Length: 137
Image (cartoon, rainbow, N blue to C red; front, side, top):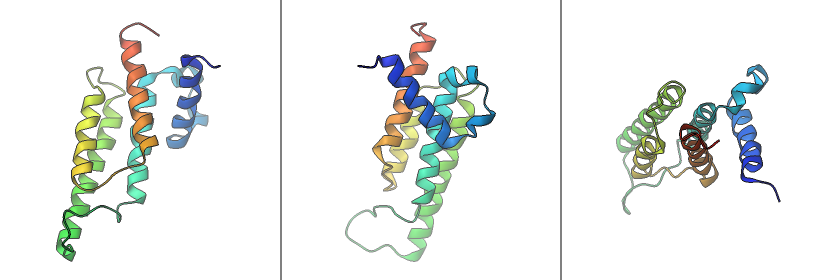
């Protein structure tokens, strides 16, 4: 059975490879949980961009074209905030999963529900970042 560290390393390689050009990243950088967080958030944002025409409307009424356009605009704004968070997590040690969770809750309120594996990747990356900050890894 693999250790938690081995499983996390395997998961991180998949996350980073999915969102970055990992061939151009030095190997020691792949050990940085801040990069994992940035990559996981970016992968989630990219996933949602492919689905921006698919969201759950509120209630049973059919949305007007203007309402659909407004909803998509708000989704894109939230995705831009996610991408900004992905850039900031690399340099701002005060950022936590809760900062991401605010964006995720906003997406949920807009009817966007990303695949759980993307949300899980972000949660795992922030958990490893917390462990690193606490000096436990």
